[in-house]
Length: 389
Image (cartoon, rainbow, N blue to C red; front, side, top):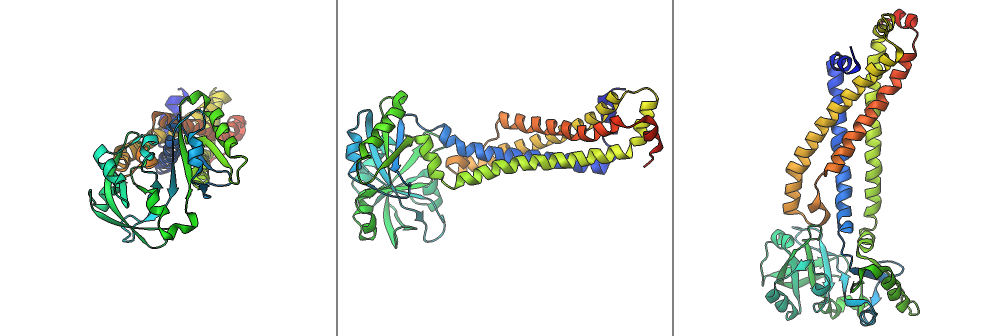
C-alpha cells in the first residue's frame, strides 16, 4: 500500500466533512481567480499604454489646472511631434439612466491626432469641428443613451453647475480593447467660453504629447518639466502608463487591498484544510499505531496524511478552476466585453492565474497536511495503540 492508494481510500471515510472541505477549497480558488483577474484587468490599460505618448499634469496634483498657453510651449520642445490637452468635466445623466461616466472637454483640432486609438469617421469629425456644442460619444455610451447622430443630449456635471446641452456629432470606436468606450468628448472652447466655467477659464487639466523617439521618453519628460520649472506653475510629466495609474488615484489602494485579501482567503482555506486533516488524524491515531506495529515507518505515516491532504486540495482546486472557467470566462467575460468598456471589458482569467491558483491550493494543501502529519509520525507505537477515539 502506498500513500496515493491510502489517500484515495480514506478520502471519503468522513463523506460530509470531506465534501464541505472540497467545497471550501473550490470556492477559495474561484474567489482568488476572480480577484487576481480583476487586478490584472485594471493593469491591462497600463501594460498596453502607448509608448510614444507622455502625460503632463500639475506638479502638485492632477486635480489642479495648467495655463492653456503651456500647450504652445510644449509643442515647441524638441522630441515632441504633436500635443493636445483636455479637461475633466465629471459628467452625469440628469435622468440617471447612466449615473456617472467620463465627460472630457478636449481640443477639437488635435485630440484625435494624438489619441489615435479612438476612431471617428472623417465626416463625423468634420461635423464636430463645425458644431460649437458638438459631442462625440463612445459607441457603448451612445447605445446606453439610445442616441444617434444629430440628437440633442442634456448632461449635468459634478464640477460645473446646471445642465449642459450637446448635439451628438459623432460616435467613436476603439482600436484597443482596454480603451474606454463610454466617454463623452466635447469641445474645450464650448466649456471655456461658458460663464459657468469662469473659475477655470483659459486653463487645462492635463496635456498629452506624442514623441518621436520612445527610447528617449525619460529624457523628453525631463525636458518638458525643465521648460516649466521656472514658471509659476510647474509640471510633472510621465509615461502614459504611469499617467493612467495616477488617474486611477485612490482606486489603486482598493486594488492593493484586494490583492492582500486574496492572500488572506488562501490562508483561511489552508486553516480549514488543516483542521479537517487534523480531525481525521485524531480519529485514526489507533490506526496509525497499528500501521507502525506491523512495520510501516514514521515516513510512511507522514506520507499517508500529507497525501490525503494533497488529494483533497487537488480535487477542490480542479473543481474551483472548472467553476471559474465556466462562470467567469464562459458567462461573465462575454457579457462584460459586450456591455462594458475599459478594464472591465478585458476581464478574462488567464492560464497563468489558473496555474497559480491551482499550484497555491496544492502547496497549501501540503503544508496543511504536514502540520498534523508531523505530530502523528512522531507518536510512539504503544501510545498510539492505547488511544481509541
